[in-house]
Amino acid sequence: MDFTTSPWPEGCRAALSLTFDDGHSSQLERAFPIMQERGLRGTFYVLPRGDKWREALEEWRPVYEAGNEIGNHSLSHTCSRGFSDNPQARGLEGLTLQDVEEDVMEAERRLTEVFPTEDRSYCYPCYQNHVGEGETRQSYTPIIARHFAAGRGLGEWPNHPATCDLHYAWSWALRGNSATELIGMAEQTANRGRWGIMTFHGISLGHLSVAECDFTELCNHLAHAKHIWVAPVRDVAVAIREWRVREGIAR
Image 1 (cartoon, one colour):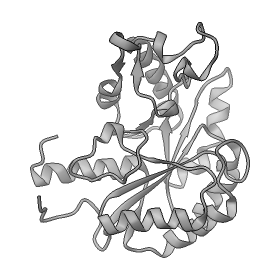
Image 2 (image 1 turned 90 degrees about the vertical axis):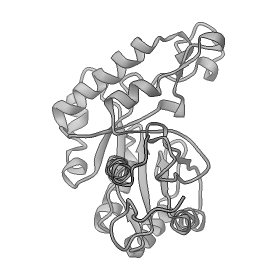
Image 3 (image 1 turned 60 degrees about the horizontal axis):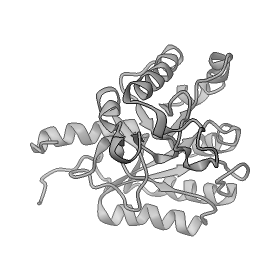
């Protein structure tokens, strides 16, 4: 199917979102300054939990005020109990849809108190979007669709703006990738006219880390790649949603 317009800003062939999970200190101390110096904005998915959640969120105020999205990553960050060797461990298999909605919306209440926004995106902990198991397994993506502009999941391909599920958008899970690989992903996205989402955790330290030098080289490339729109997940999702309306794409 051919389209007469594009959801991307004029002159851009594709979109790319740099996203960061779990609120690691290296994101605040390394990734954010590198992006800020180059005029790049992204999405930082933080966890507003603990007794001092408000104070912890305030550390991210400079990131928010610089135009980055502070995204929702749930309150409890519950994943499958398959990560544990204890069959009684807390996990998504033992939760209900109501449990998840209450958890996610309490996180949203806290985030909104500190970082108000008209739209926000959600990031599935461990990329998992289900509760229950076997015959009782259900997706909780419909809950995310009711409350958020987008949901970020896991995939191996950049998202086509006409066909992707905005509430389970695919992203690349990155760990130890070289600058060459990262830049290649960005240009692959541009060549296909799609929306690529990169998921980072630690920058040069912590788990699932990418070296600071490789991240810096990617940002250097993106700062000069005028054919790629680098924007937070929320901003791209809203642009796609509005474009679908203009193009008459029923989604």
